[in-house]
Length: 319
Image 1: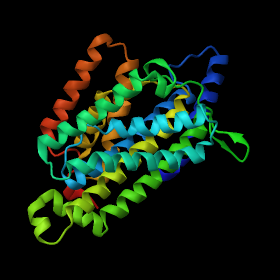
Image 2: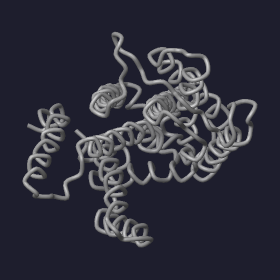
Image 3: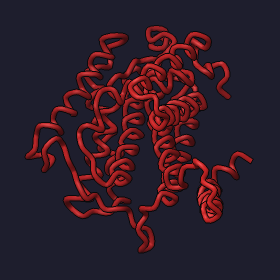
């Protein structure tokens, strides 16, 4: 039933629109948001689920705190955005190139940090994301616009049809999310995933058992970065116009909160945490709380972590 509801969601939302129109013709007004608005929020929530799954690979599977994940999100967004807007390349070519570009940056960032753990690794990842953010914000010669603005990114085309409507973007991100879940799940339950788990528990013990730390950490960095870059490429064509402000450091913290809320190292937990925080943030925005919405948002997070310190789903609940 859940799967049917997910697949048929656009029909349900647009059906609700028609129902509201019929009531309006009879002078009955209901405060029901439009189908396009609901689909936009769901698309954004699915995008955050994809990003949370990508980030979860490093802190969840290998036990390394990554504070710079937004850097790969940025790399993917600007790679696809510039290729499409400046060079006129197809989205279906820009998307895999963005993933490859993100993976390369993941390896480049990971190379000097393979022996770092804990706070030292976190600081390096933070510095990496801030460096990329400052480059796209200030280097107008590279991006082609002030503050990293890239405008008029064309929509993807499929069999001659442009994919720009919200229901089309919904199925688009749904397919990307399903593929990401499949990749992450297969990796976690493979030899690579077992090596990551050993590294997370005790690096020295893992190395003494013959696990190549350099190789398996590099794989984690590359896969995590590639997923983040895929999310950035989708975001670029979905927003049409992007700027550096969409990739600030707090975006990394927001995504990190999602996997902590759901349960670090848990695939289902990352999805649930992303869905809750993405929808909760929008709900508090539309309800007239004024400036208090951030306070309420923080209180809710504190209460959840107070009573579920291991997250809504701990690793023991991972199937």
